[in-house]
Each structure stands twice: as structure tokens, then as C-alpha cells.
Image (cartoon, rainbow, N blue to C red; front, side, top):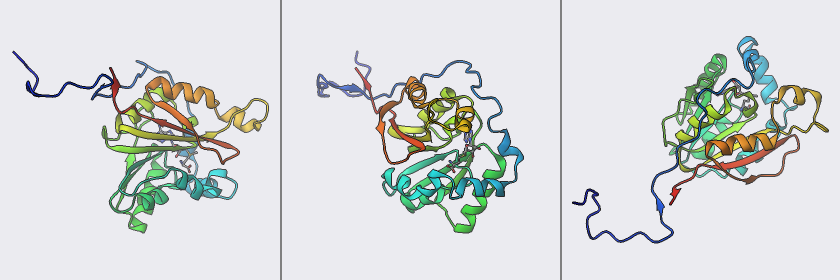
Length: 239
Ligand SMILES: C[S@@+](CC[C@H](N)C(=O)[O-])C[C@H]1O[C@@H](n2cnc3c(N)ncnc32)[C@H](O)[C@@H]1O
């Protein structure tokens, strides 16, 4: 007796067919913290200091914010997660890019940044922005709801990168994109503060992210201190 619902007249799939399920993320059972205490400073300092630091002219990604958002090529109506949104440097430009029919989830773990994001969203009347309290292992986004997850200078702040990326993988829709902007780390050319603060270079970051199940799609050029890496959650599992 047949148990599938397609019935006897369903056409046979073509030989290159794919199964309509996406592979689950590969997450280690009990990943140790790769950078204990890396976010402590955010809990201690006054939020104004971080607004100045994150949004000031000494930060490459702040100076080139418009180009970075343009390079994301966001469609109106898209659902975007600004993961590690900080003070909201990108959040409201992303909200403008997705428009009233889209949505931005501004995700962070630092309570004072979450308060500021809520205040800024309310002051701007940005009704398409929702602020989300994450924890170091989980972005706390609904599964299969996000078209693009954007992490700007956040990757080196992830204490449990593979576990956390697993939660982002689950939150993305099949075929959804992940874009990671972070500091170049080259033992020969990077400044001392990058070498001590930024745990891993580009090759390690790509290895970690693909180990979870993301496909690496390439780099977007244009920044000197940072790289821009593009990944995608597979849309279907090959036969
Ligand atoms: C250097 S700031 C970058 C902020 C913002 N993306 C920007 O470019 O201005 C790093 C941010 O990552 C946040 N963060 C660290 N670990 C996180 C995690 N597991 N989930 C969400 N946010 C996290 C920190 O609280 C902080 O706001």
C-alpha cells in the first residue's frame, strides 16, 4: 500500500532532482568558549562611549557604512538580522533598505545596547525594527524566517562561534545569506591591537562557518582594514 500523499499519478522526479529538505547545521556538542570574557567591556563602559567609538570617523566600517549597505543588495520586503547590532550603526539603514514591507531584527547580548536600540527605534518610529536579546550561544531568532544575517565586526566577539552560527543557520530561510565583515588579521601587517584582540584570520573564519553547513560564495572587495565574506545556507539537500 502507498503511504505517500502524492498519489500514483505524480510525475517521476528528474535525475538531477534534490530532496526538499535542507541539511541540518553541524554543531559541536559542547563547544568551549574560544574567547572568554571578550564582551565584558561592553557591560562595564557607559553606552555613550561606545556610540562615539562605533559611529565615529576612526572606524572604517562607519565611514563606509553606505557602501557596505549598498553592497548587501537588499530587496524591499526582505527580513534581515543585524546580528550584534551594537548601537545600531547599521540597523536603521537596513530598516530603510527593507522598507515598510520588510523587517529588521536587531540582535545583541549587551543590555545597554539593547536599551539604546529600543530607544532609537522608538524615536525614529522604526516600526519595522524588532530588538532581540540573544545569548552567547543562540541568536534567539525564529527558525526559517530570515533572508539575510549580517555580522559587522561581531564574529571576533562570538564566544561559541560554531554553536551560535548553528542558531543563525536555523533562523535563515533555505537559500538565505550570511555576510560577515571583520578585521583582516595578518601576523606580518596587522597592528598589534588587532593581533591581540581578533582571535582568527579570514581562512579560519571561513573554515568555521563552512563547517557548520554554510556554503562560501566569495568576497566583496572595497575595504582595507576589513574583509567582507559571503555565505549561503543551502536551499536543498542533493540526492
Ligand atoms: C564591535 S561591536 C559591533 C557593533 C555593530 N555591528 C557595528 O558594526 O557597529 C560587537 C557587538 O557584538 C555584540 N555581540 C557579542 N557577542 C554576541 C552574540 N553572541 N550575539 C549577539 N551580539 C553579540 C556585542 O554586544 C557588540 O554589540
